[in-house]
Image 1 (cartoon, rainbow, N blue to C red):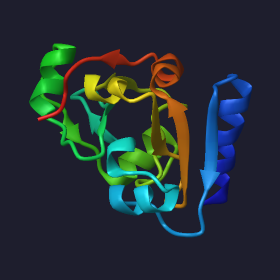
Image 2 (image 1 turned 90 degrees about the vertical axis):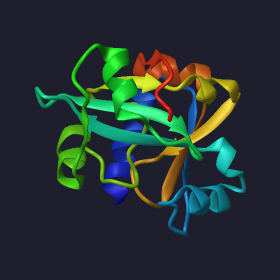
Image 3 (image 1 turned 120 degrees about the vertical axis):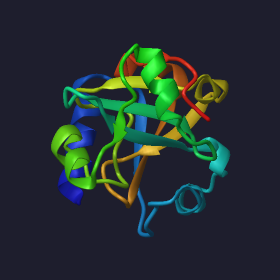
Length: 154
């Protein structure tokens, strides 16, 4: 898992992204586990929901930790048929990161950031593995992933 964390850290440095990569001893796969590990609240975390369109392209909907993604809203936002949730194998293949550690930037995808994410100055997102997170300003996040800010939560 360290290889994925190192890949993300190199991406952050190489692209001059203002963000802090944090490795934890405890697993932080779920929103609550991640909040506990970071000494934050679930409201400070985001989830990256990976989907695939009918052409096999990766779409990542970024929502606050307590929210759920509406695939129909994602489809409408992108003016495409409703995408499907990606499998664990597809997530690793298309993002280069394992499920549970997928960051909100650093690979080829269409990123959609829910507006509620932008309400926070700083957010925590996947850090490459289930044992790491990235702390980043929400404005820096949308610069790093060139994400569209559109409502995609249920």
